Image (cartoon, rainbow, N blue to C red; front, side, top):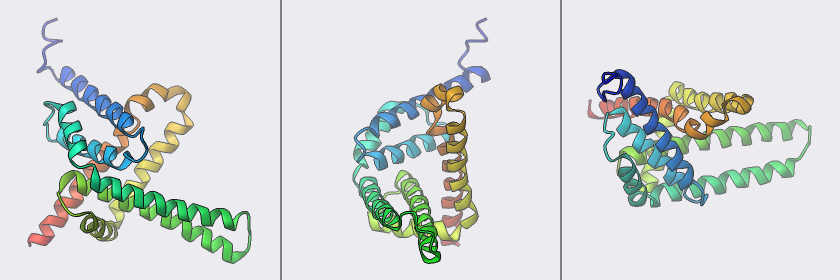
Length: 208
């Protein structure tokens, strides 16, 4: 019995990781409540997921909150810019209404593409904020270039979030507790791993 509850036991290590992910998820949800802090909350989540991947699980809560407070400005600016941009596109979309004219359909497609691309760019920006200390507009510029340079992984990042969202929405009644406890961190963990590989490859190419 003592072996079962041994902290070095693989099963206990797994449970510890799951608990850490749930904690990160719940903290992120709480920090997102003011709305304007959604960007900083996601950035802090990426930061903590990075630490968890590296095995740096000590002082998880205090480190998470300290990073959130210290790095709130940049991600908040990016998230507000993104929100304003998407809101403007949505307003234009409502003006087009139910029009079936070919020009209106083309414009709608362009708007949806712009919404998707801007969201992916912001995900890259949050990942950069979580890993590097750069100026806001330098981060936005780097996010744009990385998003374009690594198109396959950018598409995969979008597919991960869309896939998880559709799956959880479809089976919400069944997986409601999992959505509440792990709904943000599960897809984000995969995205952080992808971003980590993108950043590492980009740095290698820069130094070559």
